[in-house]
Amino acid sequence: MVIIDNKKETTHLLEVLAQIQQALEQSDSFALHQLSDQLLHTASIQQHTDILTIAVVTYSLHKLVTKKERIPQREWALFIKKFNGELRKSSEALQEQDAEEFARHLDHAKELIETSIGKKMAGYVQEILKKASINKATKVYEHGISLSRTAHLLGLSQWDLLEYVGQRESRDSPYVATIDEKKRAAMALAFFS
Amino acid sequence: MKLLIFDSGPLINLSMNGLLGILEKLKTHFKGKMVITPPVRAEVCERPSRIPQFELGALSINALIEKKVIELPESIGINAKQLEVQTRNAMDCANHSFRADNHWITLVSDAEMSCIALAQLAKKEGHEPLLVIDERTARLLCEAPENIERLMASKLHRPVIMEKRCSTEFRNLSCIRSSELVYAAYKKGLISLTDQKTLEALIYATKYKGAAISWEEINILKKLG
Image (cartoon, rainbow over all chains, first blue to last red; front, side, top):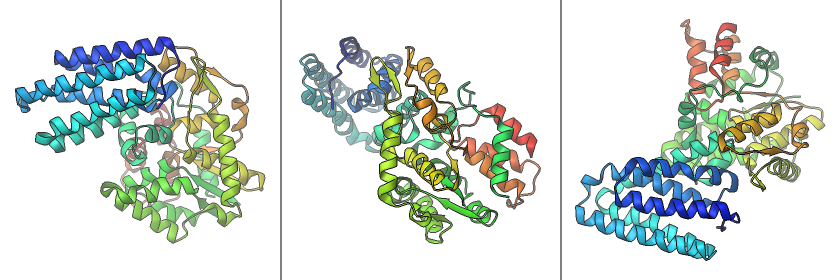
């Protein structure tokens, strides 16, 4: 739990928090998806778990918005009001450099997803939050952070991540191949001779 | 002595693919040991044993430890304290090697670095270690740390600066992935399947469970079969 020490990044985070509120009010699933990725550069460098929480929560909202017809309209409107209220308080705390309050309101916002919506769609919400964590973890891993470190940051196990990482790495990265594959294969064979 | 040092990824990979049995068979093909570190053991056995979805995998790996197919560093005379100190040094180096926006990027955690630390200690003791690492970052640290710098810069869209000492610290360590491990098992006749496509199926299986291997490398490996 640390407040970002870079003014430019703090301004960016405040903008993103405002945009998340707006996108949620407009039920703009696409914008929420985009916003959930926007924080990953900062998250990969500074590795604040709070920023990863925002990314996970925003990705979960993107998924929930597409299923909002399953939630009673009044309940959904109340959820948005409470959720955005917590994000506003969190933004105020960030502006005042109050790390504890910033994290506390973020946690409240996340809890609202589990409690306000979770009552009717408990299993679905839990699944969404888990998948959101995995989605963000695979992206942090793509940024160059090791798998074990990534799993730790997102509170996951490597068992959760490996299958997804394997499926996402379908395109060849020019940086993955290092030594000649014939040499590596020969090294493996020679070891067992 | 030859030492095959496993990171968590390849063990999870083999477990998820139902291929853990090849380790017992491979063990009879070399005079040496298969070793894991305590942080890796925690990741492959202790933690998943509390997650119903992965409990069977954890039990299967633990059975290999109980049978001494896979052993702990004490079995080669390296104690927990030595390994802990070396791991801390390796982590300190790796996590103070890349900078962006004036921030050191915490790249790795103790599980993969304990494998690298064990390989370093084993080498000093005159052993012949070979690391089995599926994930990209730890392997790149050993083989081409400059590729981490390039990868991160391309993903973060900003300059990433690598400290010079990182380019040499882990360089002299050899790595294979679970893909080359199943290739070796196939070449040694340890796979019971006889279909012509067996080798490619094995390699694809390891890729889709997290081995960082390119399609070009897969094609080379397939041709070698």
